[in-house]
Image (cartoon, rainbow, N blue to C red):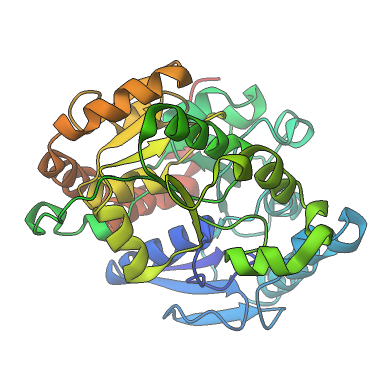
Length: 384
């Protein structure tokens, strides 16, 4: 395939990220498979990114994620500075066939504003589409800019103008799904795991409260704001409470964290994270928001760990109730489902992941979307 794609990952974290980094992990999973299919990839990220690509461009030497806790008027220029570099490159070179953009809100707005002579754009929507109603409700990207979701449920909740620019959805994937059906089963522990950034939408407070009430061991693994380890958060003192996720943790989660039944272990990455997830009796998702993509869900399946979750967002698309997980509309019922999770077969989870959620499957789907975006006449759009 003769195709050069500028993959715009943004300025916040390197690719792959050093631990947590949802979008950056998606990019790191997708790019190698695209290159295997013959796509030439120009990565727009930060200089410290180590993902093998055909070419790399950057404005910042390192990820700027730590700046997100600063006031808006001090941080709002970071994405714009990065995008300014991307736009300059697009106007000074003629070898970019398509831009695959992953930068929230400002990436889409900038790409749409470039005019008809700029390359076609596919903008992937990784987040809650209720966050930017003014942009999404008034989007006009012409024939050049299109979007895709990471689940059907995400796009179903999108404003009309955004749906009119959609070419469909692509479920997320994980390298762990490759050969998952042939992987030896891990020895299971007795704990449940909530894996992900600690914030109100993920519902770690619900999980911790249920663990104490029902009596099941629970491990919380993920950062609190910019703090990846308990000792880092403790050392930050009261100043850390300026971050809303830190306030949420101290006010709503920490009262249930006793270091025994409920533990917060901070960010885990690499083999440590995989081992922790594979040995869990189940993954718990006590969601309070409409989860758009569910990376942690497909990772759990790939490692043979059933999912117990509130049935919101993409969860019903990813989980078959009674086979690969247990879903409920009532967060208070999660405690009962936790006790039944041990009856589910981990092998069924691994088989599902190997069949549906490999990087090769995701990359092939994106190549199909690239062609649709580049050929408007052959591009049926989603119904409005």
